[in-house]
Length: 106
Image (tube, rainbow, N blue to C red):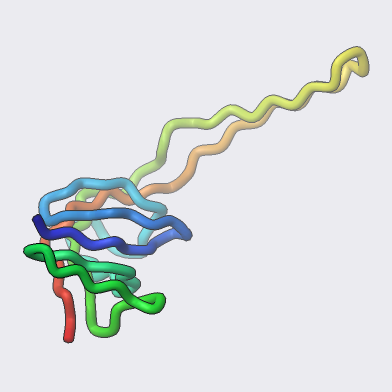
């Protein structure tokens, strides 16, 4: 079992080759390849390497499937008996990627 822990968009993801995941927007076109260089940990055949905090030379390569937006999140604020109501929405820009390879580095 081969996997890695990467950091992107302020979040951490555990990924394996072939995984499809949605991350915060990446500046690249759909169909192109993207490399995540902030790799925190890799594991392959029982051998685990942990960075302090990042692994030098390690990278995870992924193919960008599409750019899009997530589902709308509704924000509703209310204070009872004060006639105070505020309604807003937010749609986060996301990128869907498929992990193709994990390079453990030196």
